Length: 328
Ligand SMILES: O=c1ccn([C@@H]2O[C@H](COP(=O)(O)OP(=O)(O)O[C@H]3O[C@H](CO)[C@H](O)[C@H](O)[C@H]3O)[C@@H](O)[C@H]2O)c(=O)[nH]1
Image 1 (cartoon, rainbow, N blue to C red):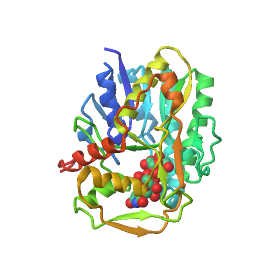
Image 2: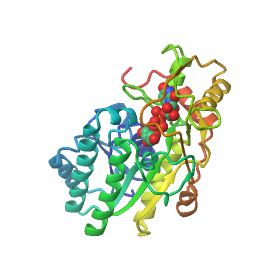
Image 3: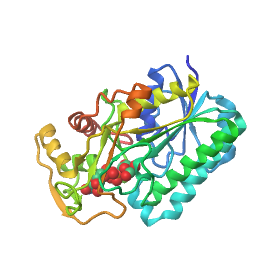
Image 4: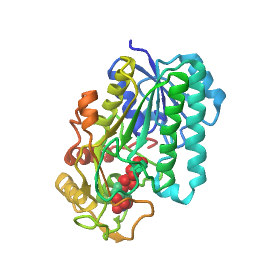
């Protein structure tokens, strides 16, 4: 047994897939989650500690009881649009939670930390391929709060010897290829599950947010990465830390962007059904194009994004969309 890993937000979409990957690699994921957006049913590979990151005593108790070899920090508010409407909540919850967790780790002697950051820290950069060295200029409170936590990690790393890996996710999509878990948000705001809901007739149509962006077809371009590939990168990042290879920052995307219209086209090919579409205005906070260069993760961690074709991401999400889902 490779040891326990405290996984904050492990009942959520990305966190739960990371737990499955950790368990497969021999670790025991201990989920710390307040279930505000996560699902107890998604916690299948280790214990669930129901707790809130705003409660420092609850963090200390979990660290003392489980003595993890590492912490993976997924728990956060993560909706761009919501962060534009209610920035205070994003700054309070994301920063306050991370600060409590890092102070808890420093006190408990946790020395390995993996953090979920985001391409939203880059802001709108005119379609350039984003690398780990690209200057970060967030244009929404969500991205701003995640960038601040990256800075917090550097300071705690230097002061307390907390080795850390920062992953900047691009657009996470798909579901567990074995169908055990998948994407389910309340409310749902993400493109692919909303599109598949419209295909399945569970909502009248997909609203396309903006057709006047400076992109080839006028709709936003994103770099979609399969959640199972993303989860695997976390195991590689953890091994990197446990082998003493030092701090790292890695973009997790595929280097290839797809427009909203291209995603809709791919859905037709996978499901053999039309997507009912409604053209709507731009959504505040959206960048025109966010595409990564994932070459550092591939070269330094040996990451292989094997599942990240649009076809498989939509196919796995479609299979998941036809199951009863959590809370059914
Ligand atoms: O009903 C919808 C939903 C989305 N979109 C468009 O589809 C693209 C993808 O939108 P998502 O909401 O699926 O994803 P985001 O790019 O907004 O968000 C993702 O990237 C963000 C960083 O930009 C955060 O990391 C966030 O957590 C993550 O889900 C965007 O261009 C959006 O405008 C639509 O047209 N209609």
